[in-house]
Image 1 (tube, one colour):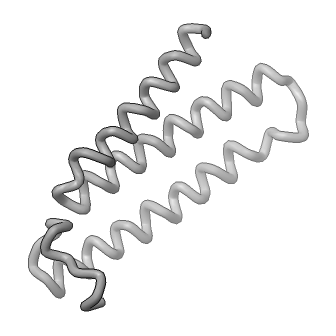
Image 2 (cartoon, rainbow, N blue to C red):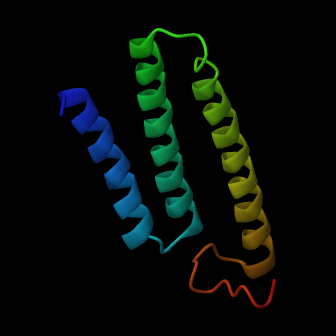
Length: 98
């Protein structure tokens, strides 16, 4: 395992554990998810550069576009939850009421 591969794997796992254990607020969950997506983007970009082929060169840009859409949808949910419930704590949000 190369040091770069280890660094990206550990950064992804750090974001995943942050998402699993520190999900008290919606914003912290969104930040952990965004960190995971950025780690995947950088790792996919480096992997595409190492391969040197043009067939998979659009994959990192596609991942970045989906990540931006995910971030905007998450922030829209954050604003809607704050306006309706007054808080962004995930324990106070009930999926049955939505």
